[in-house]
Image (cartoon, rainbow, N blue to C red; front, top):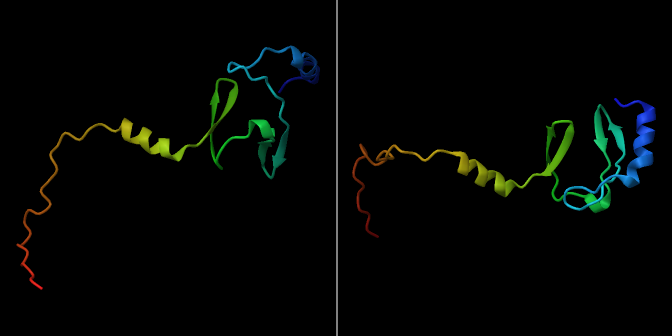
Length: 102
């Protein structure tokens, strides 16, 4: 954790910090406890779409990324290796079907 003096320095210098890579200014969000979990209040202008996010660490950063369920399937299929083996003949060994006439 940061000492209180350094947090005050950051709060004082906050308006002078550079903008985010995408040109958006940084925002301060409030942390709070929800039961045993830590939660963050996301400002309305930074709301994420959907109801779920991917949550992961990138160095000392905590990253929230919206879950796009459609892209998950496409990414999964793209990672699979093509099947080289021929598919088995599923009809092999079955008895012939009788023609049924109405």
